[in-house]
Amino acid sequence: MFKILRHYFKLNWQAQWQYPVSMLLLIMGQFLATFVSVLGIYFMLERFHSVQGFSKDEVLLCAGIFTFAAALAEMLARGFDSFPQMIANGEFDRVLTRPQSPLLQVIGSKFEFSRIGRLIQAALLLVFVIERGKMVWSWNKIATLFIMILTASLLFSLLYFLSASLSFFTIQGLEIMNIFTDGGREFGQYPFSIYGKKILKFLTFILPLALVQYYPFLYLVGKSNDWRLALFTFLSLVFAIPVYGVWRFGLYHYQSTGS
Image (cartoon, rainbow, N blue to C red; front, side, top):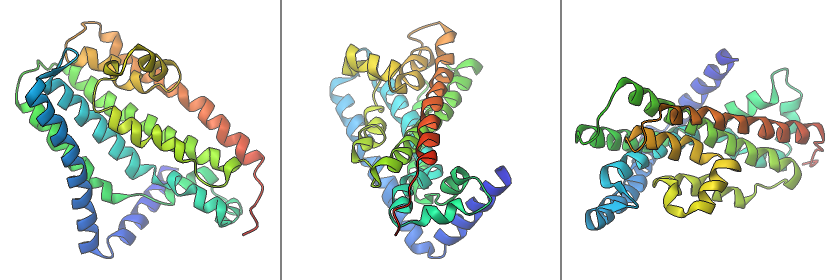
């Protein structure tokens, strides 16, 4: 499986870099778009200094983690975003005739390398916050940082996967899912507790974004000494079970559009 994905990755890389100037401009555009958003957070916190007990550095760290995770998911799981078009134009019929897994082919159909711009910007933000030296780091917290990025990226990928799976029933993509993907990325630049207890509960038990952000973040920035909060990130992966169930159900009941 990984060999096939590596082959898809290489093909997408070569295709998108056929026009290097265009690609570099796209990467720069993604960098600047996210940079403006981060500047907004920075200047707001220069004025108010903290948000519900979270300092400027802590909020910027949260923004860097979630921006990096979301950009990684957008780059690697972009095939799900183009899946509704595959359904609508009948291309998915051709996918089903091939010996490889349909899911594998959908994932490999598109990797969006322009998101490298957002990855660079998020990485620079993380380096900036860490180098300021106002937070105490240990190996446990470094591991927590990497686990948060990895699991948050997987969770965003699952949201794209869910959006693609729903296309079996709606043919066209559902714009409402952008609330949870693009919206989740933007809202996740702040600790989720600032939006109120009801939102926090929803993002804990229904859409588990808080499990990869808020709870491990409390341990990361020293607001809790309970290291078990870092393990909450793995609980979010249970979300993969119902999402894959929707995919399997939609695939079983798939009917061609006839395009």
